[in-house]
Image (tube, rainbow, N blue to C red; front, side):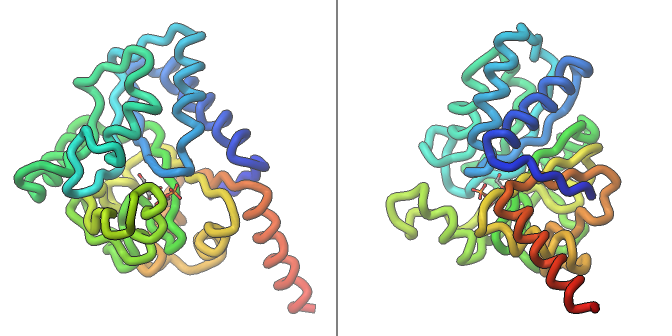
Length: 253
Ligand code: F6R
């Protein structure tokens, strides 16, 4: 894993948007693994701008989103379908036939999850997978305790995830309690993984990801065994990690 301090969300978002543009230009049939949440909000508008000014052909680009809330249909304002369309897919000429987002309102959710996993496997490895991280170390909606060999399935969200996501809903009771999420094994298929984390609330999870053991109690720790992972952080997290390292060094003298 490479830890990279890009100072703040704005610079980090520019970096990721440019990396996605480079991939799309060099590999017009590329597969992108996409994430949602606050961490990603500036990446997609930046990417859209870059795609516009560079007149990029997106016809054969495939995208897979990590997850969707169970029970929300695509027109719900808080669905990840709406999020992705507002920030990215409604701009430029994305080919809707190549845009994959799990359906949280599918009549048979387990079948939807299995079909999503099969589609992902048949299309091949994502060239780049974007990830955010939960305060509890989740990636996708793979909460602590998720087996490392998990695939796309229906998951129960933990109370801390429901609370963190409640800022987007009128009341905490409106937050879905379940999601359909790619599994840890599904995520590990990607050729290159870029995980982003900003701010104090994520510093503990990143510190455990970098310094702690590989354990199912911190789902993100599976990334320690992936050959090509970048962890992009801001000054807040980087300084925290630096302070921990200095404290450990001081203690060893
Ligand atoms: C979203 C996802 C989640 C988020 C994580 C961080 O598609 O899979 O793992 O990346 O919950 O969320 P934010 O960025 O809102 O802090």
